[in-house]
Image (cartoon, rainbow, N blue to C red; front, top):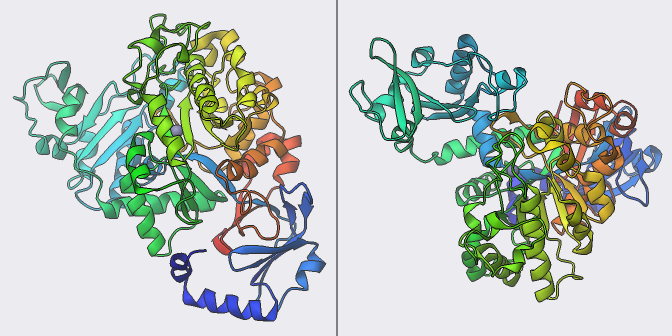
Length: 598
Ligand SMILES: [Zn+2]
């Protein structure tokens, strides 16, 4: 623990620690638990002793109780289940925070609920703050059994008007969107700030919608929304702090003690401020985008820079789009959209051969073409000593990153080194490519909850055959990939993904929707055991960020990061996975401090 944090955690805690140390006692004892340690040397235990920010002993209740003295706090777990603190390998803290503090309209598709939800955001945000996103109508569309943004919509989808929100937003400008971005709603204040009146002409490729009397409804389509968007100021710093606090709260409540973030400069400033104020209750692993590499390299920042609470672990970049918007890159077109094979992210450009990725066929390799921007940036990352973490979703997107990794690992003689490079999502893999995950010793950073969400329309979009390689966790693991789990919170524009790890564990062991469909699980051969799933949410992510010595299991010398549940996750994960979804966190311990108590 750095001096900075030590001070932040308070002089009182410090003094107590020193006393306990002198007397050889512990500061916090957890007794009478069912402790699943994820430590092969001792998988189960009853009790843990903690001193400072570390675990000092693991054993039976009798053994651990002997370490008690006057300064010790003892918690009787009464048989509760304990796991290592969950380490969420894929969180967007920024957008999770803006969703938690702002407005979530995913489930909203009628007037009263719409007004209520916006009113809620007004109560959380200071006057003058913008209320944005929202994504109304997403669940209405799923309810209609559609392919979300693809083929069908309900007959008359809900369309709000500014009259629904004006009465509750006199001081909060609003620009919220339908989940598929097909339309936006601005309130009167936002229209005024943007200078839009009944006389404003429609911009090219856009429409300012009016009612039968020529009055503005607040609905804006296409480029008309840009007229409002361009007057939205950046998020104020104080609001950013409020947002990160909201994410830390959700993490504590879910037993999550580490989040591996996608990190912007503004967010990093907010994390540092909360660290100074002693408010970090989860460790945040930092991943700037790969295009920052020239700057961080120039500054000499390499892997592990920072401290145990804020640490640089990787560079993030993207090959392709996502399934939800049919932007993931495939060799063959989407079944529901025969003109579309997905898209390439801007960071991939310029390509060595323009159009190489789009034209590439299933018997080709991306490295058959001259190197493009991504390859050059990864070369710099190698020189800086921070591993690449690259997003790939479609079968072609995965082929591209595997090709680039294979070539660069060989060129730099790293194939057999301890590189721990990651493929983020590895969502749909071509049958020829699975073995490469093992051969190249890659980490597959996967989001099991995508299974429960996406399976509803995967086959409609890419057919049965390609779906065999989708979220193929068992095949990836058997091929030798190291699996690590992340929630991908806050989710997509059509569904909320929660930080609470029970959702991901449930998805990985059941391969069912939250409603338990299909009965036997979707491609059930790809199910993982609950032990494998917990490991992928604890030990795996710790190893993948080079922190296996201090995190990932409950063992002496490791950080005292623990999650206590009212339900034995191992037992129900095996016998009745649906019960995972009802499990409640009783305590969360991070760095030896109880940061959440139910
Ligand atoms: Zn993500």
